[in-house]
Image (tube, rainbow, N blue to C red; front, side):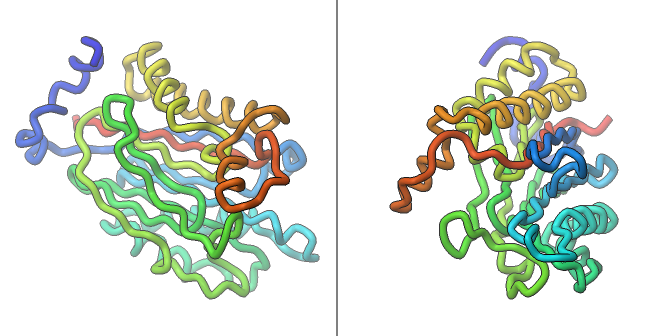
Length: 271
């Protein structure tokens, strides 16, 4: 670990002290819509609540686009808006359930969703579908949520005519410490960027500016841009293609064009 990072995270290796510290999440979101969806901003949505140390990402399912009157973008945005409203709740499942109940059930559309909530130094994450959150410590991936899906490329989703409810997702909890990094994103990131590249980019973004607020903005932007660039590369051996092959599907190639939403958070001591 480099000296500058060690100075910034001086409480990291003293986990006993960490239990007596108050922590918060400093977070930034960056979004790039699919090229064909630029005019309306795409179907991804996100929220950041600094006050409540909570973040969320929703990926509106584009498969509804051929249905007249459908609007997955509205569904995902409303779900995240209501999630922010309920982000004072300590459990991310409760946040998502309350938001889900408040969304207009007549909206023809659906979405995946992931919400992370920090209470003291306990991070809890609810994940429904193939968005997700990864946690990095000293720029190494130490945890990632599991995708919940019916089959390859058919994730669990909340919304119109879906039997999936928030409690069908995975609920995880882990202890985090000062300077741990949480990346929550739609599958536009995970399908197009490998974990090793995310680790390197986080390190580079941190080295470029040690200020945590600047770091989260820089890292979210750089990760989204990397995902978008890879998604447009027809020769790129993407994580999506590798996962397809693992499932016996061989006709995909290159990156996977999609909306990209990235929220980068860093665990900081409450001032």
